Amino acid sequence: MNALLQERGHETIGAGRTLAVQNFFENLAMLGMAGLYFLAIEAGMNPVAVAYGFGIVVTSGMAALAVWRLRGGRSC
Image (cartoon, rainbow, N blue to C red; front, side):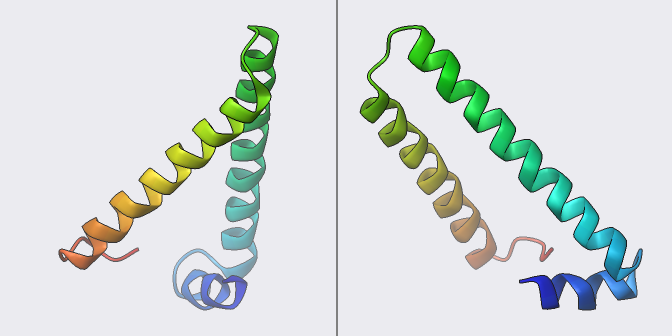
């Protein structure tokens, strides 16, 4: 994944900047998901149910992206 990002990034804004942007958004996503998890736990939800819910959301999002790409969506 990083090799692809470096190759594509070299063509546009530079490999280092591309990886920095990727890492920033990965960290932002992890912080956001952890925050939502702790808010759900604080609200009294079952931790296992919250984990399953996150899994369903992520799986649904990946499936939607796969269908979009297979139907000819714009490549990234």
